[in-house]
Amino acid sequence: MPLRRLLAICCVAAALTGCGHVVRHHVVEPSGPPSVETVKPAPVRTVLHAFHRYDAGDTAVVHGQTGVSLRLTVSRPSVSHRSLSSSHGYPPQHGSYVTFHLRLTNTGDKPIAIGPHDFLVRIAKQGKVTSFDGNSPYSGADRQLDTTELEPGDTDKAPLTFDVRAVHGRFDYMPGGVPVAVWSF
Image (tube, rainbow, N blue to C red; front, side, top):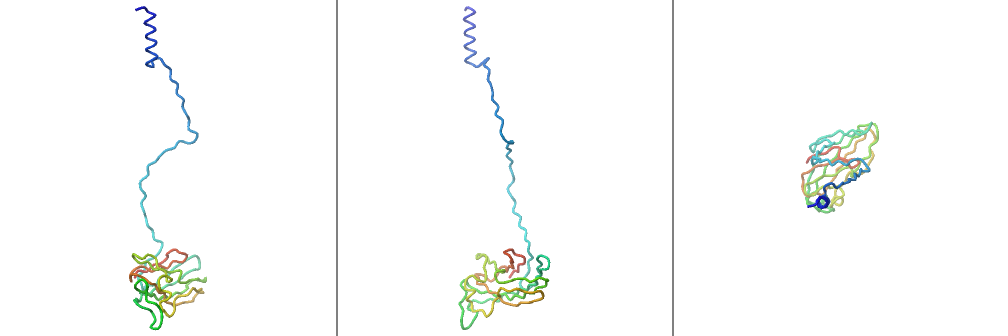
């Protein structure tokens, strides 16, 4: 086989197999910082309570901002399954009325606004219950806690009634919507 022919065959074979072929690589630089994917463990749920727990009947002293202090006693609840008046009122819509007798004393040196909107009960399988839920406003109760402003040294005593499914739960004092003291009953 002549040398020229052999060289021609080798060149064709090299071209077909990529031998001797120059490959140019274009490197593309990212325009921003490199992205790194980090695998994080699943979050752990930690629950911290910023309130004190008491048993019904106990007295709590709650301190707020400078000059604000309240002594609050929450009685054990009285329970009724019918109207709270012999002459008028509706029976409970959810099964029972629980009535707490509150004693509120402003022990600070600034006035404190307080009312029924600052309190609620938490009942299993019912959730949060206010004194405005169910038939509580129509229970026939003589007097309920009204919104009032306690001057330093003032004391107010008043009941607060809730229409609930169960007579055990938690009574919350929640000024501004945040629980600061709770009582188990």
